[in-house]
Image (cartoon, rainbow, N blue to C red; front, side, top):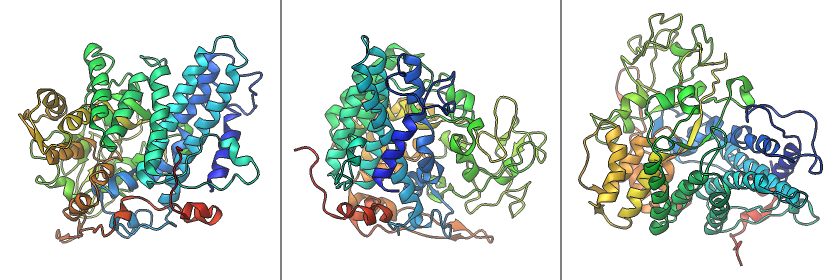
Amino acid sequence: MRVQNIFLLSMLACMSLACKKSFLDSPPTTAPTTENYYTNAEQVNGATGLLYNYVWNDWSDKAFIGVGDILGGTVTGVQGNAQYNSFYNFNIQSTDGLVLDTWRSCYKAAGQAAVLIQTFEDKKKQVADAAYLNVGIAEARFIRGFAYFYIGRTFGDAPIINSPVDLTAPGKDQVPRYFQKDVLRFALEDLAYAEANLPEVSYQDGRVTRYSAKGLMAKIYLYQKDYANAAKKAKEVIDYATAHPTLLGLNNYRDMFTSSQVANNKNIENLFSLRWLAAMGWNGANRYQLYVGPQPLLRPKPTGANGYSAVIPSFDMLNSNTGYYPSDGRRGWSVMEQGFHRDDWVNESYPAGFTYDTTGLATDDKFIFTGTRSNILKYVVGPNRSGEVVTPDSHNSMSTYILRYADVLLIYAEAILGTGNSTSDAEALKAYNAVHQRAQMNPVTSFTKDELLHERKVEFAFEGDYWFDIQRQGFAKAQQMIAAQERGTKGSNGQINSFRATLSSASQLFLPVPQSETVIDPLLLQPAVAYYK
């Protein structure tokens, strides 16, 4: 789908948004207009609510883990799988479906946000008190800012569309690529507005706040290697968390990834997440469990669903030298392995609680047998039961974390480290150890850049982010990091069929523009130009 059509569809979608009690409820079929609608905060909030949900469907389906974790090497077991194979071995083509899904979803979210921004700006001319509209604009600009941050670090040089309406003018449907630095600057400008206009405390659980904006700005600054500003923004979030420990801080690691109730309700670590409802099915529920969950957990009643184990933890993550250290609690909170047990996960195969059992030497409704003899635990909420709805399609209401407080802490620690090889700075250590010790690890008295990257690897594995930590090191370091990873799997004989991926070109650090876009818009094949004159 071409960029112009994505934005035009976003315009049409935004014209039909309204508000119900939940900001994820489906919109009505009647179409409000700027003249007779958006007259109060409730109506504006209803419109911005869908920016957290269905506009991200294409990306959250498979591209989320394809880009962040398959490229990053934290998951494996995908060789021969048409959906993931090219990401597994860095043979990515412009015709790949996950490339198009990533592009389409990001521009859809950015486009819908842009339409709402313009709609609310127009409405401000008709009302005396525009405070509620400014909050709506800030929320939409936050989402657009995140979309362009993801576009910039995924595709590098890319189009920027400030006003979707401009694309409808004669001769204006051809859009060039702009320099990545301009894409990131555009994202920061949106987030600066969000920082200035979002509330300090969320007006509805799950909505972004001023500190969400500060945290995401810190992440972009770190990506740009602007360590001073990264430290400044991260410190503002940390200072607020220190002063308001019940509003922002670190939560129980395991439960916030295996319980939608914990994830969705007053989760103080959740600075920004996509929000899903099982009742919304394919268009608005979380599908992650369908792809990563084990069959004997989900196929038996009461769920009667599927668990494909399509992507599984890599041996690189399971190796105590390159992944989880022996004492790291995050392994047991993030990965299912032989003997893993949950009393509260009850089904027909496991009436006394689910036990992860690989001794059957094949996968069926009782045993599981994957290429690394493990499954991802993060985002798996278990079988359908009271208080945790899981549909017969394995859909659930689990949030998808985009920015956690732990990320801000490690951003701050890395920003203080800056260009140095190691640091024993007290503030950096305090931030680093807050994350490190929650994982039941002993505090450190110094850390190196490689140790910081390792901490990020085990903290955020399977959350769609680690590839960008590799990518931002530059080609030479990224090439070295990828070459060191074991991406192979075990055969039925228990022997590892080793596979080491190879980065051969700096161009592989970014996804190509989808071919379907370049056919319609040849400017996308031309060298990037400056957006800011």
